[in-house]
Image (cartoon, rainbow, N blue to C red):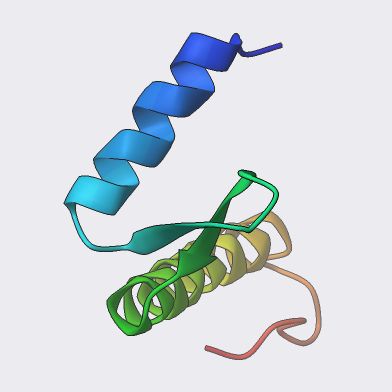
Length: 71
């Protein structure tokens, strides 16, 4: 389980890289929102990860009569 300081450090780094932005409510609560840049980077990471997973699954099922996952 990550500590609060670890989470804070990660959020600070993401904010410094303009991937998220923070805002404070009237009740002095701090919230974070993903930026457009953050959305683009996240989509790219998901796409790359999915391609890797598909390649792994195709390798596992190689030799089957049909390829389970298409690239």
